[in-house]
Amino acid sequence: MPSNSPPVHSWREASRVYFKRQVVSMLFLGFAAGLPFLLVFSTLSRWLAEVGISRTVIGFFSWVGITYSIKVLWAPVVDRLPLPGLTQWLGKRRSWMLLGQLGILLGLLAMAFIPPQEHLTLFALAALLVAFSSATQDVALDAYRIEIIAAEYQGAMSAMYIGGYRLGTLVAGAGALYLAEFQGWSQAYLIMALLMLVGMIAVLLVAEPEHKISLTTYENEERVIHYLEDSAHLPDWLRKLVAWFIGAVVCPFTDFFSRNGSLAITILLLISLFRITDITMASMANPFYFDLGYSKIEVANITKLVGFFMTLGGAALGGILVVRYGIMRPLLAGAISVALTNLLFAVMAWTGYDLIMLTLVISADSLSGGFATAAFIAYLSSLTNQAYTATQYALFSSLMTLVPKILAGFSGIIVDAQGYVFFFIYASITGIPAIGLVLYLMNAEKRDKGKDTREKGQEPGG
Image (cartoon, rainbow, N blue to C red; front, side):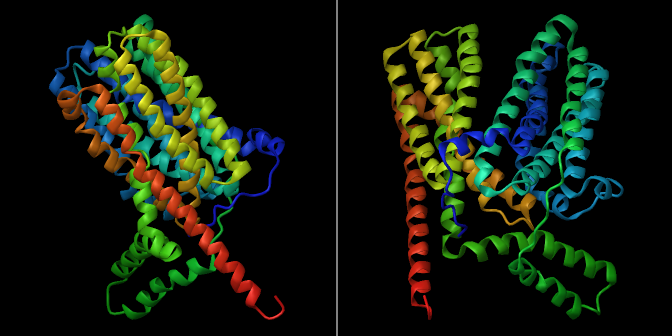
């Protein structure tokens, strides 16, 4: 299990982490990651509805988002395959980020110039190109973020990334709607495409991370060498293909289990369960606001604008505390705070319509959500091996939403049967397993440290 013990930093040193150039760069790279997301989801749905596309077809368009959930399938390619010309120029991570951004740019340009009501299939393919390229950019960007700076700064990196990402979604959501209202949808998507230049310029300006391969990793990949030695009777192309598959796909998974030993399953359980509380609650949030009588303007002003700034504040606080105290204590605090804020929604469901109450609850929920997310991303980053960063982090990021999204599908049944007060209490209770797992892993880390200390004390001359 990787050590998450806190380095020694003063509060002043911890707060100055946001002035590091690597951390600042994540604001612009996060913007490039967040911008395309809504342009193939809710913003796109509004465009299609306005031009008369049927609700059935609009529903089918949501399937392009599956690319974000299955990006782990091509993450090994991003981890291992050099891009002719680009990799020699920019390096392994930046070349794939730039390729993904170029795909997003071209896809958005195609969507801007293809009328969906006349050429729906071509328009759908352009949207798919945007989603696939965006997911590919995410794979390379996550690997870059982890490799470019020490683990103790990952909380700040994730906080700045969250800030940039949320800014990108704000521009692609509210910004694109404003542009579409006054300039038309094609012009709006054309401007969104040009805004991808922000990320492309950032990629050209940042440095390529140093790729460090541990001795354990080299030993782990000796199986590839043994395979090549033992398979001389097979065709050369097949030997190379299987060897690549072992090194790029098999080794990342065996590496994770070999490094974490008996705690590997516990860690995967934590990854699967950590976000159950907020994803379960979020699935019923908008129907809840509607049923309590809040208007769309009230919801937009409070949940989007107030929530945006409170999320940034929470993420920034999480980044500072990770530098100050290490990862596990902020992770525990985040898990507890996210579970507790769901109880505030239960109180709001009981009291009814109240704008002040809505503002307070959204502020607390967004603050805790930003804080917990920054700590959780830092934790996931600490679990990766730099030899397989893209593949392992893609696995973790896919796994962290799978179980929560499945359970969230039953949220409406619970609300219809028991009401909102019961539902939000239930959503809060679903956070207890994650809290317990964090405590268990913290205790396991303490035991490992105590064991190491005793063993060193027993060494001759110790």
